[in-house]
Image (cartoon, rainbow, N blue to C red; front, top):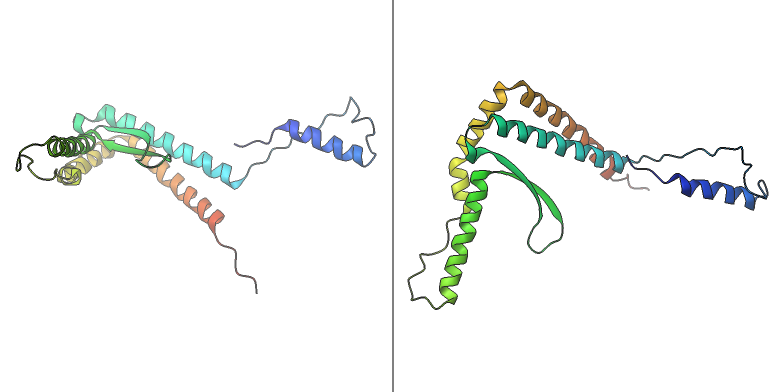
Amino acid sequence: MSRLAPSVWSFLFPLLAAAQGVFAAGPPEDVELDEVLIVGQQAQIDEMRKEIVQLEDRFHERYNELNTNDDFDIHCIVEARTGTRMLKRSCRAIYMERAIEQEGKEAFEIRQSIQGGAPAGSASGPPAPASVAINMRLPDFRKNMRDIAGKDRELTELLRRRAELVERFMAARRAILKPEPAKR
């Protein structure tokens, strides 16, 4: 919840009143000023976004506890993509991370061999895209996740709560971003 500091308002109102001559020497000592709380739609959206992340984290934690295939454990990271300072959260299964790492390693090795003056033909060609390795195991990963989530009430409840919250979040965003009708 976003708050405007009460001290800002405690200075504004007496100054305004003093300027109008109501409180020439400031407000009386026994008068308590009200605290003003401003809650905007953006603050509500930010709170919903944080709650979605918390639900996802709880889901992943519980899923990882129940999952017996370590390759299908899910980890989330917050990172800035290359060329930007914008942070983005991404959650991937371990096998997906390994495929991405392998693609990077192979690309680095090929570049190193080319720059190092390796004999022609020593590079085996471009690295296999990580998406190929990821997509090959994706059906098994999805089945594993469905099986585990379908058998655990806590995971099912977390998924239900997240879906409801995402729906409310999207409706709130649409309400803010809705363009005003053109004036004639």
